[in-house]
Length: 327
Image (cartoon, rainbow, N blue to C red; front, side, top):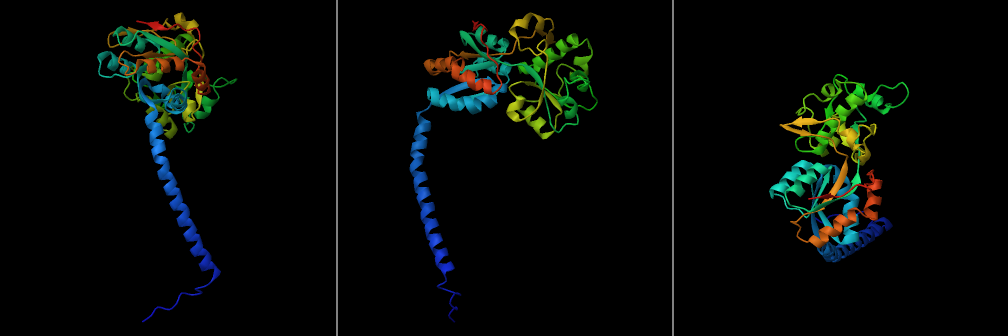
C-alpha cells in the first residue's frame, strides 16, 4: 500500500525549510573545511615557539599561566612550560638534580640560596615583591566582621581569628615559604599588638595537619566555603575573586627597609632556626638550561618594563632597589 503524500507538499514553509537545510549544510561544510585549513597554521605557530621550562613558586601560577605566558609568546617567541610548587620543595629538587628546569622563580631569598649554594645557578635577579594578607571566604560566618576590620569600632582581626570554630588554612612550613611566613606574621603580630597568645591560639602547633593544604587548594577551599580564612600573598586572593584583610607593614613582610625589624622573630623547625625575609620574587637562569641564551632573555624580560606593567595589574609591587643574589 502506497503512503499518502505529505501534507502541503508545495507549501512555502516546506520549500524554505529545504532551502535552509541546504544552506546550513553548505555553511557548516564550509566552516569545517576552513577550520581544517587553519589547523596546519595553528600547529605551525605552536611549533614555532621555543619551549622554556620554568619551575616557579605556586603563588605565581595565576599570572604565569595567564598574562605572562601570553606576553612571553608574543614578545620572545617562547612557550612557557611551567611547574608550580612550594619554592622550598622545588629548590631541593633542583639542588638534588632530580628537577632540571631552564629557569627557577622563588619567593624570598632562602629557597633561591639553596639553588645557588648547590652550584645550579650563579645569580638570581629580583623582579617583584608582595606582602602577606589574610584571604577569607565571602560566604564565611566571619566575612562581615572581617570586611569591617580597620573601621572605627570594628573587632580586630587578631580577635576574629581566635573565634571558636573558625577554619584556618595555611601551607606546609617545611615545603613552602608561605607556610613559614604566616608563622612569622603571627609572631610579629603578637609583639606588635601585645598579644603573646595570638600565634598559638590561631595556628596551634607549627605543623598542624588540620590547617595545612597545598597553595592552590586553599584558594579553592575558600571559594567553596570549606575554609573561613587562609594565609595568602596579596597577589593571590584577587586572582580568585576573594576578599582579604590588609596587614600592617610592620608585620606583612613587604618592605625591605624593615628587614631588621622582621628578623626580631624566628621559627625553629626540625632542628633548624629560620628568620623572616622580605617577600621578594627572584628568577635565576639555571646551568641545566637547554637554551641558556633564551632562558637569560626570559629572566631579563621578567625584570623589564612590559613584565612590570603586567605584574602591577596583578597586584605585584616593584622590586626596584633590591640587590641580586649571587652564588
